[in-house]
Amino acid sequence: MQRRGSMHHSRVEFSGPASVLALALAILGAACAPASRAGGGVTTAPESYARSPAETLREAGGTNSSQATPAPTFANVSYGPHPRNVLDFWRAATRDSAPVVVFIHGGGFQTGDKSVARRDPLLREFLERGVSFAAINYRFLRDAPIQDILRDAARAIQFIRFRAADWGVDKRRIAAYGGSAGAGTALWLAARDDLADTKQSDPVLRESSRLCAAGLFNPQATYDLLQWERFLGPFREEWLRSPEELAEFYHLKSRADLETPEGQRIRRECDMLQWLSKDDPPVFAACSQRDGPAENRGAYLHHPDHVREIQKRCAAVGVRCVVVLEQAGARRRDARTEWFRFAMERLRRR
Image (cartoon, rainbow, N blue to C red; front, side):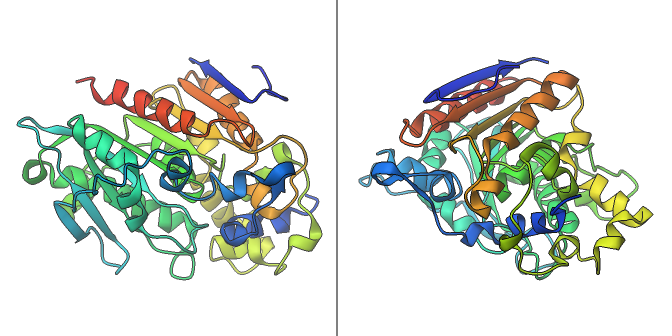
C-alpha cells in the first residue's frame, strides 16, 4: 500500500489510552470547528469536504444556476417513528425499475439536513442518467446514541426497498454517499451485515439494508472511538469539553461503561473496519486534507489517515477500494467526478 506525501492528487485502487477521552469531541463538535487556512488563503479540509459535496462542487464551478433542481417526487416521507425519520425521493423518468443513489448529510450527528442535496449538481446528473435519488434525515445525538442513528439510516434504505413497486426502484441497485458523518454512515451501511429479518412484524425491517456501492467524502474510518489514536495519534487535551464525552457518544454514563460487555458490544456494532468483509460492495473514499499533525479537532476528524485505514482494511479483506487524496488547492471537483463515474459503473449493472 502506498502512502501519499506531497502529491497534489493521487488515486489508488485496491482489489481486494492516552487522551482517548478527547476523541468524542472530534465527533461531537468537529462540524462546528473553525476552518483552518493554508498559505494564500487556500481552504483546507474542515472548510471544504467537511461541508457537503454540493458546496465543494459549487466552489469548483459545478453548478449551472440556469437549471433549477427539480422538486422531489415525494417530499418529507416518513420512514420511521421520529420526526427526523423523513426522506425526499426523486423518481427518474424511466419505464423500467431504476437504481437509486441515497445522499446522507453530514454535521457531526448534531446538525444538518437533507435539503442540502437539492443544491447538489450530482442530483440532476443522476436523474438525467436514469438513476433515482433520495436524501435522508436521521436523529441527532441529543435524541439517540450513534448506534441507533446508524440504524435510522439502515431503515431508510430498507424503506426505499419496501416502496420499490410504488416508486419504480430496482432493489438490487441502491448506493449511498455523503460527507463527514454522512460518509461514515455510508461506510457503515456498506460494511454492516444485512439487517433484513424475515420474522419481523414490521414489513420494512424484512427488507435488505445492503448497498451496491458507497461514496465517502472525508469519512471517519470507525465509530469505535477507542481505536482512533491507534492510527491518528494523540488528541490534544485542550480540545476536551467534558471528561465523559466519549461515553456520551453512545449514551453511556462513563468511560468505564465502554469496557463492560455491553459497551464492547456497542463499540463493535459501530466499528465499520471490523464489519468489512470480502462480500461487501466497492467503496470510493476521498479526502482533501493535508498530511501531518492535525491543527484542530476538525482536522483530526477528517484526517487522510481515516481514508488510509479504510483502504488498508479493504485491501486486507478483498474489497475494491478507490481512493482519491487531494491537497488543498487541487481540483476538488475531480473527486466528485470520479465518484459519479464509479457509482454509475455499479448502478448500470443488473
